[in-house]
Length: 205
Image: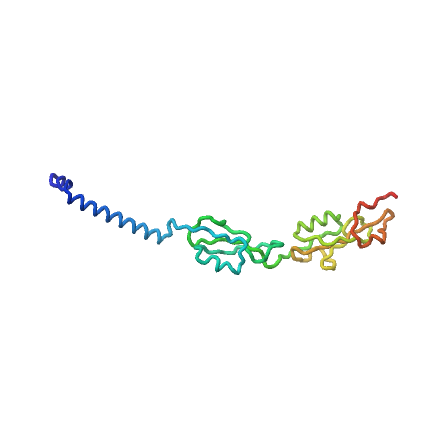
């Protein structure tokens, strides 16, 4: 025991101890570095901004960015260029693991089809509200002699009547024909084919 204590106090012991400690630190350093590269532990990349990128350029855009992409949905956006990214998840500048999938939403190349709503027998105001709520556009509004004053008597698409339930592309323009009549029950010929305010006519002179 005395010999051991005496050896610990020698310069030779401290030299060997220092070498062993340095060797242990070096081994642990390389071991942790290897484990980090093997498991990608702690390796993150910044998510690039895909907003307004075209589908055709996504492949070259993500090259060397450290992430992958996946288009999961297409959305019809009137007025927007078809085939561009309008939303992504996770958002740009987020920190994610290397090779993480970034989920993308793009504008649809083709407008979806919807069923034409029933506009006849409704007031002009109601018909316009329905048109816009269906993602359609309001076209021209003309008048025609009719017993129904101020209500829609025809719904027109591309110059022809269209019935409720018929498939039509979202964003299409729908024109209306509104019935008008005077105090005697008839619309003046001078007003036929014009846009009028149904409140123009009343039951008195």
